[in-house]
Length: 220
Image (cartoon, rainbow, N blue to C red; front, top):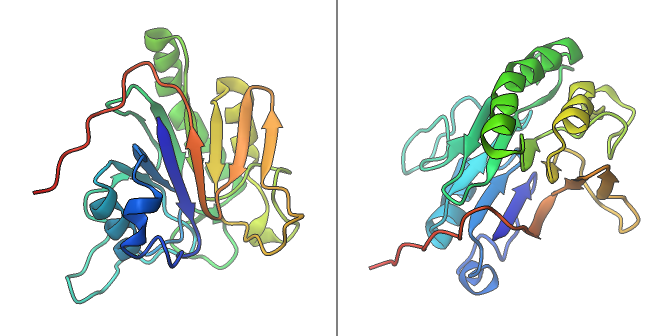
């Protein structure tokens, strides 16, 4: 299956009719945060495939627009502190936000992230018993500790994410939050069986799942 992962910055050709030609083979959309809900809804509507997301530290509690006020993207599935199984058989889990630096709504301490990770653990262990693996894709806004992160507090990585990677060994850990302005910035790191990817802007991924990809609904 083919996955479009997005985060942090709107891309002009994605927010246009060009998306249909460029990403016609996409089976799933994953947002790693800090993108407006109208942008996510546009992508979801145009590609007509499921959207899973977590919020970034800059997300608003309510987004106001001419089409109505919303506290989440219509049609999307919030992964924060949840473990989900997609119709294709893909196992996903997510955690939102960043380290706390100015008391924003989606900011947490390292200790709070540990509690959130421990909350996911029983569900991931149950996945391991049921499906022979705990997790395929971990979706977060912030990066894991000392991988793709920076030294300043807002952009430091999360220690609990490293633990989730080490213990549950997802195929991918997708994150955003760290903006990429130079070509020499590292955006992919292999940690054991897990590939950690900064999906700033957008990234396309391909992976096998236990089930055949769903049939896309035709637009009438």
